[in-house]
Image (cartoon, rainbow, N blue to C red; front, side, top):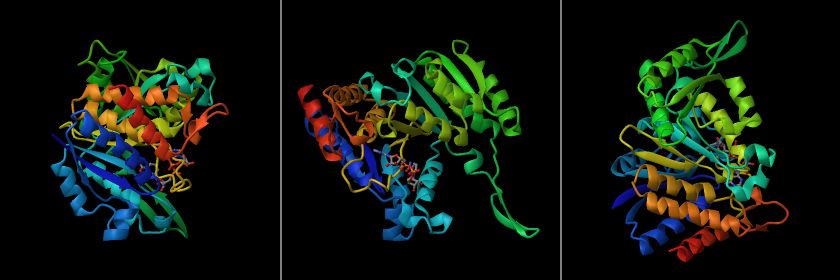
Length: 359
Ligand code: NAD
């Protein structure tokens, strides 16, 4: 029996998590999944109910669970709140309190979706790369930070810091993942300009000595951004810092046609993971039954594979998603003129139907 904390969050969060719950409920009932669900609050909806975007109860519940399934947080409604009360603070808080330092973001292009990419088919067809992003340190957390008044004008400042141990552990995560794949790690930095990246490069090179079977290369982040759209299939595993990973993984996501398709995992040293789609709360489409729920459904598959040791059911979910796409069903974000456009709810139902027929 595994115990999973469900945090729908804000915006489209509830709609897309509801589709993932349909899948979990089906697997619980018919495929002996035995997943116990605990429901909790995070983000703007948590702030509205408790005055805190990350209530203590959410952290307490997380500590009693094996994993978290998260929708997304954020929205216009909370943008004028003090920074520490904003929804995003809840997300950053749970990542750092559970020490979820390794963010694993696959960018896979299903062959049926090759037309949805903005790049030429031959550049992206068969794409299968993983970006391993450091998630709990770097410039998003470094101090000092703030905006100050000096000489009659305001200065904004943040601090990019990485300790040797923070770099080392994310390096090990990337090399271990590469070992299960094509054994290539590309470490992305800006070592020509930033000292923090100079250390990043040195430590990655040291970590590589423990993995003689894996090839390490280094690339500056500006070049990596260019190479991702020029020749993305040259990569296998990219490992990078919090800020660079944030940007590059969204860029990689677009190669696949929609950020609505991509799951992610954030894992700590004990294997506890938080699983979530890579996109945000999409307030512009919330409540319209048009959000793509597949990234969230695929996040359940990642959870089964990486934290709950159930690759069999993970494969079944991925196959069910692939089958629905093959039948030509698409939410609006991934549709071309010849596809059957369906809503969020129907997509969830179809994935369950597909699971049933593949039993
Ligand atoms: P976003 O990912 O929410 O949306 C970007 C664009 O992609 C929008 O046009 C949106 O409609 C579309 N989109 C996103 N998910 C989709 C889906 N499943 N199906 C179809 N289309 C989808 O990013 P944003 O607009 O920059 O941010 C909106 C809010 O979300 C902000 O408050 C931001 O802080 C927050 N955010 C949260 C997370 C998270 O919870 N992990 C991540 C990024 C942004």
